[in-house]
Length: 275
Image (cartoon, rainbow, N blue to C red; front, side):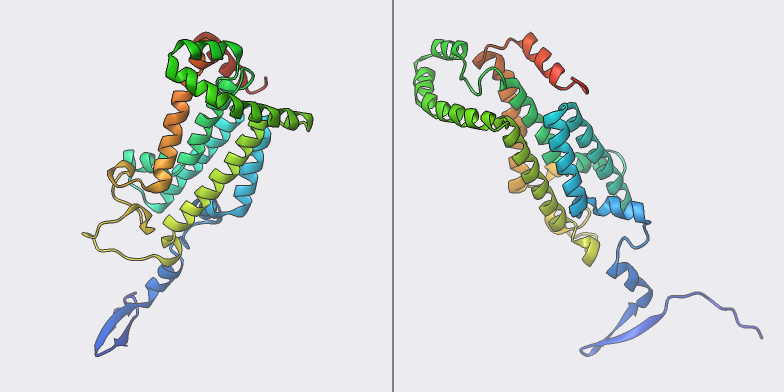
């Protein structure tokens, strides 16, 4: 009588205390390397946020192209990072549609915040930072006594920043570019810290029960959407940064000599690929 051979996983009886536990040794490769089944390119895409080479290239290109060419390239690089993050979510098994898209946008929140920060800097560059222009001071004084008093207190501080800006310009450095460059570096560092914390499962692959809640920073693929759980410090900081910069851009024609048409023209010129 012939025997039928079956390709079944090898099971080893592992003694733990007084109980025997069945262990599938063929699953050990998945446990030690959850993304071992991916090719070199998909694997790099999944791990790109923790790559020092990617961080250096991203920071260098963002600063150089934005400061010395056009802020259009900031938007282009952020768009490229969005694509990488969207592909990464697909390789990790995020659900298609809103779930995958929402987490893609949320995990690139610092990149998106950079665009809003650039809009604010460009809205006030060349017309006096804050309310430094003479026309701006007149407008503020007309807005009420409290704002006038606030302006009087802020004027000396703004004057100090102005003197600092003169020194930087004498060195061939614009203060706004220096500030933007520092933000790029700090935001990339924060994003790398987020990836290292939230994606620890790519190395450890912890298992959770089907009914066990999955917090955002647990290092597992979350079943919820970003806004359905507490945001945390980094999350609130990014949201606040977007809101504050959006308000600052909208107020630029109020506290500077800009009008809304001239503001739009200025931003359009700054975001042209080859100004």
